[in-house]
Length: 172
Image (tube, rainbow, N blue to C red):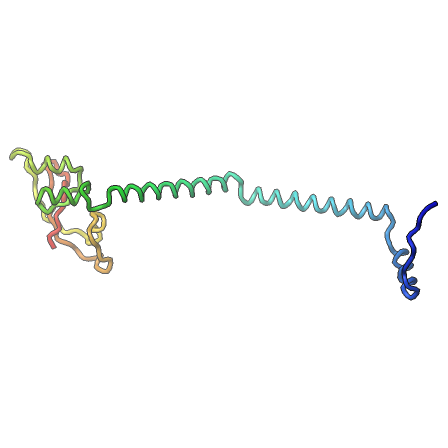
């Protein structure tokens, strides 16, 4: 004995229900449509995956993240070094200038600069007047006004006998 659900459709809707039942596709048409939609979806997914692979390789994304991490690490190390020995402290060129009392800013390692100042008469240093572009002050770690970058600054260069510039003294 098969149990059929009771039909509770009102009389005025029965003709529409019969029409919809007649228009409903059969199981073979349903299966064919489902197979075609699945095939289209898979091909679209394959095209999208292929386009993504061509647009940006995965190794490039990994490289970008790695470079960003490396840059952040380098910035953190630089900040740590500046906190340990900020410019203008005992380890800088300014301290060597103050210690020597000459007003020169060394451009070579501190030991070489001190040796040049203490050298005997045979290896004396030479002083050469010069005019430098004001923008060079920034490279020496001195205050710099960008509005006056094209002006010249009077200076003296300290040279060793071979012509190597050991230090510079700003005169104005």
